[in-house]
Length: 274
Image 1 (tube, rainbow, N blue to C red):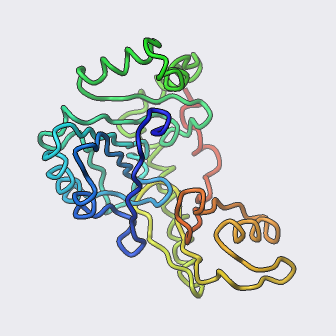
Image 2 (cartoon, rainbow, N blue to C red; image 1 turned 90 degrees about the vertical axis):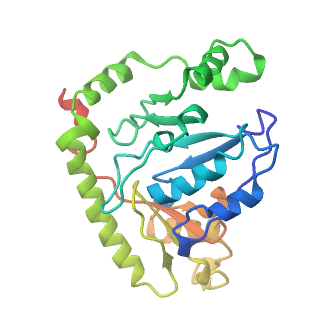
């Protein structure tokens, strides 16, 4: 989407032993007078990383030096988080409201995947331009227009019910997150016992992002050479019927993303009770 907007995306590397968190010094070294938008995601998909308030404040100090730099903060997993980690909204930091856009929605915390309904929060000066593009006043925003219009009535009704469940979804979402936490603990322990597997314990969301690079070059009986994350995922799918997402698809060649097991009803769709 960045390229469709005639922008040049710059991907900043993160490291597994640093919990895949952005290094403020690296960010500062890569920013230029042409930089216009910093995209953050916390809790993160697919790493499960959560930015602490202290780290976000360090990033905010750097952002403040670049007056034409906006921050787009994806916080859709804010209610799926595991203690002692806590969520901090970037826009809530001192001096950041006027230059920050917050992306959120109902798909994750309220299990409304497929019923795509999200929202954007920010200062009216910025949202005015978003509204103009949504109305199709510029041909360059045709794709954006398709993404932000035509929210279904049933999804909107479900969202109203979700908001009526109390802060962070109340007991129903809390029960769901507890189930995710139990699965997280089991999977982290189990993968940690496997030789050669590196893992960063996720602090939020419902994914594991695992490093299987020590297996690359090995030959699997009946399959052939495990060359990279894509071939490893194909091998596991063929031999064990286990579906993973290869890190290659996310420009992370050494890792594979593994969604944690989703809980069964009544946890998945608590809004249906309404």
